[in-house]
Length: 80
Image (cartoon, rainbow, N blue to C red):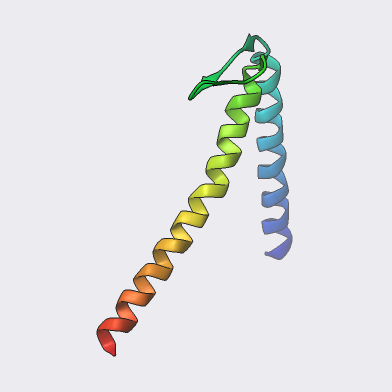
């Protein structure tokens, strides 16, 4: 069973790498972004999209962690 899980995990990772590679290769047209007056250099469309995805993948768990800490504090204050 452990070997099956490992093979499945490797297959999913390889599939994600393949999909990401195809996405990057298909979205090579340059775009310039302006955010609150700050203008970024022109990059391939895939770069800002993937950066936004990675940033969201970092921020999401951090916000969930803060929320769970807040819930634990409110639960402990109610019992005390």
